[in-house]
Length: 464
Image (tube, rainbow, N blue to C red):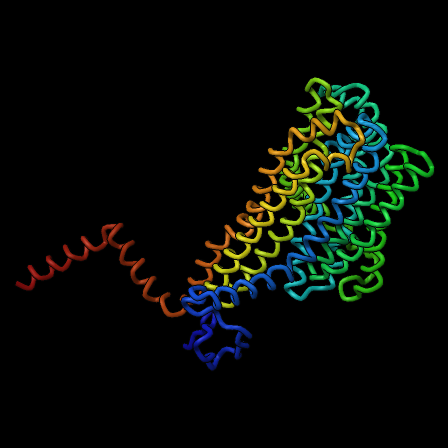
């Protein structure tokens, strides 16, 4: 009986029983490709272009999404130190908790939609989207008490009373924004599963200047203070959610076939998968929350929280860029290994780590040079500026670490995957040999070899 290898090698003709596979457009790098300056220059440029073709749109989308909250802090910060600290606590503690939990709930949709899309069951994407939206909406209702009683909760954990009251007011005003995530997160995962990343990027990029306009209008022109900031956040989040929903229902006819009662089936199994992702993401996000809560116990909590918020905003903007690089290096390494290009995978990691480190060092240098000035983006207070300046060195070190860590985590796990790929590629020619060796070891372990030798000796004695 003729067998077909699980993976066809690139340098072998296809077997008669398997269809011909298209050869990759590019071959792997030859040995010594980086030993000459000309070769190194060509290699470095090729990998740079391949990296930023992927990292650019994803990183830009992440930066735009987070920048809406940074812009809110910038506009509110010029109202006063208390307003800056209160809005920062609300955004970084209460809203970040809800944001992370709902984003984690949407991660289950990413898994299921990705599997359905890969299996060709595109018609199931719309049903999964509706199930995720239903569960996310119920989750928003369950999270409502945290928003409504934000001020008492902050006071219970020891935060300043005036700061807690103002943060609680801002949090209650952003309740409409909470429910927008029940639409925006599922639709975002729905689009990502079909590799329609540019659409979400364009929507986020378009919402950013609109958010700045609303902040200026409501805070300064209408003189609504943090109430105007909350209205701007609500409008921006609902604009993104509705724009994504309109695109899904109007231009994704393959995956969206209208509302269906099937969305209400198997909700429990969908919920268990969603909860696991939500808890994991919340645990990862709570380190930032804990830092803000600890800062609230320091002397002069308003200045401590405000200066920390300024540094965190700058740090997270850089982190958003490198999360895009994280996604890009994962794609690059997987593509190279999938085509049987181990050298391409290795060089892509080298180039990405080097460029990320250089960007991190440049960011640190900019922060250290501008340590006495960048706080003016967020506040006019001299006291807040001095406190922020004292944190600049730690911020710079953190930005360097943020530049390399996502790249390493994005490529670290691929060693095991490459071993799996190599084993599968050679599986057809070594399976029988490996099974025979394994059976022989098992027989020896079980004592079967000794028993056979004894039987042979008995037979020889009987014949004699």
